[in-house]
Length: 339
Image (tube, rainbow, N blue to C red; front, side, top):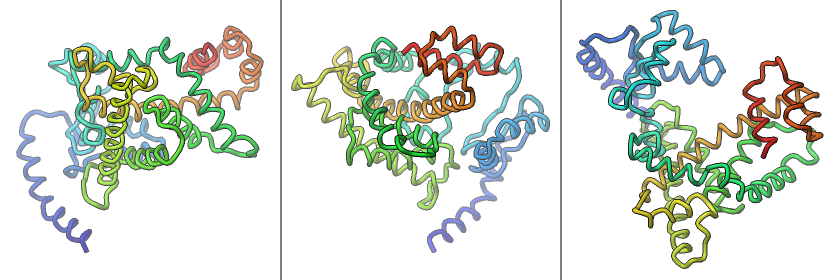
């Protein structure tokens, strides 16, 4: 019954939204349509992303409207630009001309004090705090924890299995490493709750931003609130440990950022919460997808696999891969091998 009421209200407001949109668009704008208010072209793009045809979707748009067009994505009027001139504009424009801004869905889920939302001095300040923890020379001391997580993961999910699905397992592994490295949360009930809330949270990041009880976006917002509460609880615990001199500032990201608060309050508690969530999301999919591609390369190329297995120098691996279309994987294998 409630669902029917919500849809009735939404449909009754649609003509008003269309009228207001038309009145506002009297200026000179690029070709293209903003589509249905709030929804716009979001569903089409999401469908293309899920079927791995996003590039084709964009190419069709370029053929239809040219290199510059307007559309609406995730509740926000958007300009799509393509080509060499567009790249130059994006990478050479000053911050007062082109700002750093994410879709409202991401802002509402991750918070308004992430690196995505900060600019100029605030961005430089918070980025400096995060980079000082994540720089390669600092990460060396966390290799032991990561090694332990990987060994445990292989024993539980890989050994003795005839067949495994790599990507979901890599997502599980990277999340466990994130819990250990960023939060200092060991395996157990608390980590399992993190996994549950985190999965619900990221599902709504690229959803249509309609906050009704039955929508993916609404569930994601509720999960985000739970994750933030858990992070704030961890902050209180780790602040108490620091004050009692019972914790090393470098034992995890939260403890490290809290230790910086004594240095001219370089980062606020709100910024810690929001950026810990950002690092959590940023490191999850990117790392798991990268490792999956690397494993696919090793599985499909016996020569490269043999070179890595027998610990040859990376120069030998480069020679084997010479002339093949794997520059991205090649660079990542170099990093992995050197570690």
